[in-house]
Length: 340
Image (cartoon, rainbow, N blue to C red):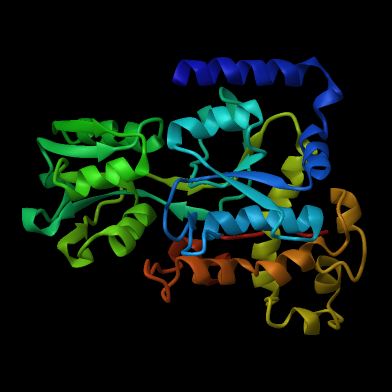
């Protein structure tokens, strides 16, 4: 699969080098189709998962919606395509999806060899381990000889091998592609350990575990996992819209603009707010979208804090702290580039 991905990436890169015909191709296709096609995960609660009515919800889903709101003025104009970890990059490279918003870590190899551009980080994460409480394990350093469930084609798989090698410990990997199958393997006891991003562990324990209290997430975080929406190289116009749609949610929170006070903020005399909301035109024209693009994002999806709180925050089953995902002004890493 990896070899095929590299070959496909080469084809994409070759097409990119061939000439400017690729410029704007994705955006034009999306506009003609009347719908954004967004690759998401299979069923990660808090990030992308259908609710009881079959409507996709989650933090990753909301960033698909921001892009649709920027392009169409309508956050509902999205079709979601569920992909496994190995399927996601071929799906993006082939054009089956326009973008990924799917707990995908930005890495050097994916940026260069695989030919992808990453939008700003939408969730700062790190890889951890979950074990059944009955094992009595308190630290990842006690996992020598453990059987570990892991998804193929991920940075998780590589980090796992690196960690055990560095700790001079042995492990037996159980590599399973589909989410439902790896979940069943762990809860049936086929694996001693399940490893993925810490947010994914929290999601699995809170929503899918028969008895959440029977499982503990070990304290060690063994990697950096900056998760970000992903697009193909060679279409900067579309990449710009994805990038600034993410920034718009962060900028709105920095400016104190939310979906609740948006209409009132239109009357603000602050030049930064007037520029951001399109009262003073220019940003929309620069991106090739309506001047109310940021207004539409905040009205229909909300600012970054609203998105975080609604999907993974303390009031949700995941109960995650903002931590690194808080604004830079509060000790976090979320920071928007200037809107001017």
